[in-house]
Image (cartoon, rainbow, N blue to C red; front, side):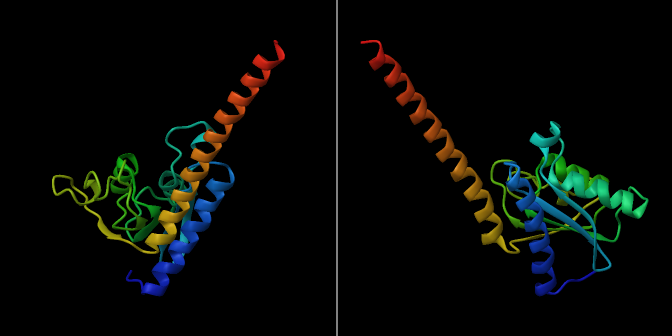
Amino acid sequence: MEFTVEEKEMFMREALKEAEKSLAKEEIPIGCVIVKDGHIIGRGHNAREELNQAIMHAEIMAINEANQQEGNWRLLDATLFVTIEPCVMCSGAIGLARIPRVVYGATNQKFGGAGSLYNILTDERLNHRVEVERGILEEECAAVMQSFFRIGRERKKKAKRLAKEALEDEDNSLF
């Protein structure tokens, strides 16, 4: 299925809503939706901390839901929209699910499996290749991630400062 720019942005905004769910739980804010025939058939957001499972990435959750919705492990006529470039694991899962098209917002310079570090989705040595489109609502998608990591760094600095102050107060009370 071909999408207009407006439709791509609409579905990416739905993925951003999923990312907000992760953010509310202090998870890395990545969201994903899978679309078939103009309808969302799978949704997912990062839930590794919440579920205590390393593989609970947004794409994996969305693929699982879409498989259940479709009653099939193959998602042949679907498009996956995700806020951040899929990692190596998720890229492999996308290929295994036979999803023909991925649209993502911002690149993933540290773990990207769809163009930044690796090109798993388009690797001609594999039996299934995926059409990849980058940059839909890129600034919004990147901003959510940047904000999450900035806030995390600020929390760590504050905790370190408070610990230092507590230690100084304890030292001063000894004299």
